[in-house]
Length: 387
Image (cartoon, rainbow, N blue to C red):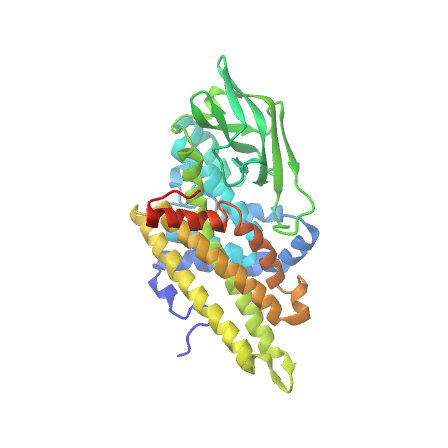
């Protein structure tokens, strides 16, 4: 029996029946609902928000959270497979689900009160309330401790001033999980969109993640009640804990993008005839695609083991950094090379490699640049902080 071209090591056989069912469900959604429209959405710079009810209906938002809060109670590997299949469609769609689940629902679940969990999480799981995550600032980037946004206590409220940048879902969001400097360290707040002084401005002229909403957030004396402060964490470990959750999902997502590019290139190379034979019959094309399959296989095994560590409760941030670094680099290289194999046809969004290549320029940058993750691994090896 021939091996599956996108799963040469039969990684699927290592999945549980439930994990395979999750993957199949999301794969079917991507094939039937995402792929027919996503090229046009990218061209138009439009996020397909009409898909949000379907995404929620499949249980993909907050999928790992307990059912009592609207989640599906799935394990970490299942969440990773969700990310992989969504990003096989487009990084923008995976980013939406990742932000909603890992960066917004997770901190409410992990750091919030029981009242906050019951107030927000079920509606977020149902797609009725959309969140965004306000950490990055224009000058901060890879140095989140260099945070200027501040929150001052004023009676029973907090007053927030400052701004955030490169915020996925910003103009879609009903709430923002905002991290701000206080006299007692960095703390998190749930800022509601109708709070006076809070505004979002969508970032235009993007050449990456065009089928995603990216925004700047502004806070001008925004008054937030104490009941909207996340009380169970202080310091950078709060937002960094959220980022570890999201980065875990990102290690899986680019695998889907890479598989989409291999699939497109493989089919195209069999159909295109040059010098009286298919492009797929040339050694140069076969060497390229064999190398892509090698790199995809390594990434699949890396993320699967990372997921098993996560589900065992032993996953470390350095391990997430290694996988995010490896898998994003793998995917962006494959997308670029697949674009090249398609020749002139590769520059249009009628084929997916150029779209994935452009999107992955963001994925390899956000939630820790490649250099940052290399330095995290270097620090683990040497015990010396070179940041």
